Length: 206
Image: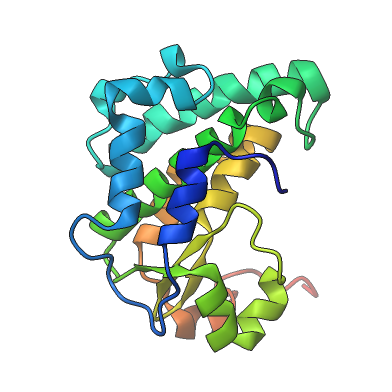
């Protein structure tokens, strides 16, 4: 979904140059600067329903994602009234604050995961990741939408900005707190590939 962005986010996207390989965002990276802008008192002007966002809880802990969920739920309710599930309403598309809200929530979600996960995640530009990983690129598509940056680990790729968009469009079923908790734990790839252990279940043939 491509919507109009306010000028400072356009400048942010232009400043986030592609990375040849996944690497940790350096100190005071453009992502840090974007989050600082949103979290500053003047950041209220860039987002929807700022009075529904309890900034005092946004300490980049896993628990703080509940505050993001509550705020996105308020936006979801307004959007549902205007347009219905899975579609963007007028408030969301009117002046760029809908996009900004999703980008901020996604960057915040991704940064919480990066700082707290038990496995190493790093920001990487969407274009650089797709160019270096064509198999993943086929699944993600060629249109980055709002996903200017993705999170990359040794086990795969995550799209936190898209997760925030889904939270707005589809509601609590796409909780960002749940996504954060899921991404923070390493996946046991061997167990996942083996499938569930059914040895303890009764034989359905009797």
